[in-house]
Image (cartoon, helix red, strand yellow):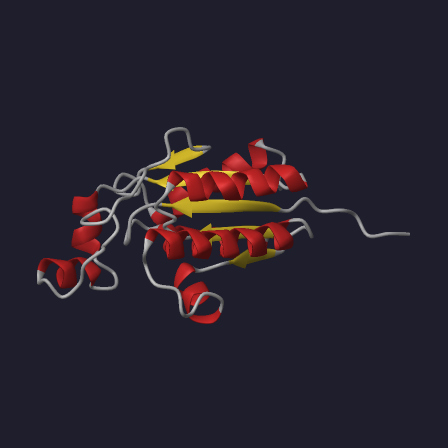
Amino acid sequence: MSAPTTTGATVWLTGLPSAGKTTIAYALAERLRGEGRRVEVLDGDEIREFLSSGLGFSREDRHTNVQRIGFVAELLASHGVTVLVPVIAPYGDSREAVRKRHQREGTPYLEIHVATPVEVCSERDVKGLYAKQAAGELSGLTGVDDPYEAPADPDLRIETHRNSVQESAAEVRLLLSERGLL
């Protein structure tokens, strides 16, 4: 007798630096694990260190990074894992290529726009990037002096400046449930 099949999915959380993507992903992962789900978080900083070291922040390198993450996410999701991907992925064409890969493979994919205004992100400044950019120590900061193409039609848009982390995570969980992915 074979084990029951669980449906995996990739949930890509895109947004500006310090928007709350990673915080929401880990809160949701904890909740889903508590419900017995297989969950992995593909954190953008960890991926850059272990899978994409050597890549810079040019448009081409960012695209390559997003495609690598998308490949790993789809692979895991195709094996029944709910994969949470809190990665900026600033370019719409890169995110669309990841979505199309999932569609070709028949793997569910959800795009969540963590739509936090840049002013709020710069106040949070979790990694000190906005302060460094303002001091002239950093250039190419997504959403400030490097482009961020917000999704026109995401599966869900979350405004973290209006919701708590738990409320935001609950919104994503509800979407997963409504799509039959839990």
